[in-house]
Amino acid sequence: MVGSAVAAALAAIFVILCLAADEHAPFDPMLPVELLSGCAAVLWLRSFARTARAGWELGRTLQALSGPRSQHGVKFRSIGGGNRCAFALGFIRPRVYVGAALAGS
Image 1 (tube, one colour):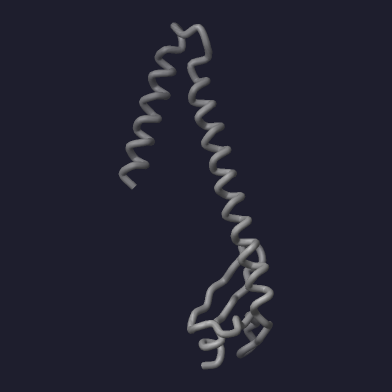
Image 2 (image 1 turned 180 degrees about the vertical axis):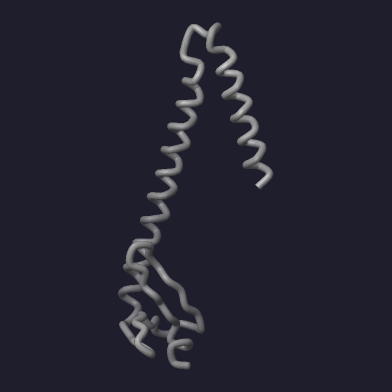
């Protein structure tokens, strides 16, 4: 948390210095900020794509290892041989996965 506050303060100081140098610089003083913002966006998209891919692969694996069940009108997928745990996977259409030990109790 402190690291992000320090980074935000340094970025704010950098932007202020760029704005102050606007009249004296032979190039666009905001260019470094724009380039850093573009790099940050690319890194964020790369991280998001990795996370989404890992979630998709986990969903495919769990789909193969689990079977559909319903208890008290609630649909979920039971993981065979699973312990007493439950979790949901997915943003748009979340699926609930329940370990067989928990589904049996």
